[in-house]
Length: 137
Ligand code: THU
Image 1 (cartoon, helix red, strand yellow):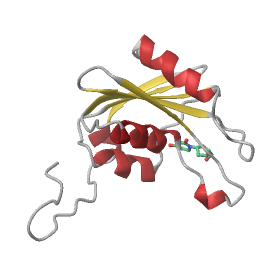
Image 2: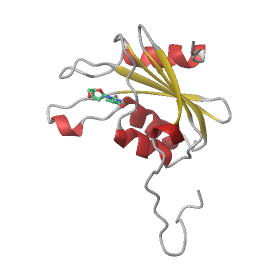
Image 3: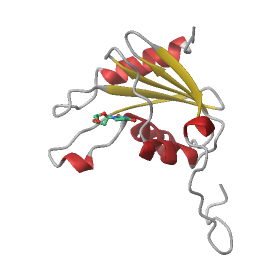
């Protein structure tokens, strides 16, 4: 049985409660842990123009990066549904920007799953601009 890290699970479920999901009614929360042990939360934010919807995982990444953090080790994606919400394709690519070794847990009412990001997205798109990356990541 998969055991997801308890404090991250609690943070992710706190974010589930703050999700803005009036259209799909699927509430998702994410808790992203940095290499230094800090944790950043995100929730899905839907919009009347459906395509603008922001997933919980990408919200958490944006909050962490805005706080100056770019090195991540674990992510919990939580929902109050029966089955886990595996990160969508766009979120997999978005997370891959920061490395393939992220440990990802999906936690729901009746199941928990664990993956490595490199299993979820074996061949991420990587862009190597001429002259190298601009920001020294
Ligand atoms: N959702 C996430 O927050 N993360 C995912 O990886 C999959 C989907 C949200 C977006 C939308 O608000 C709702 O789930 C239904 O698609």
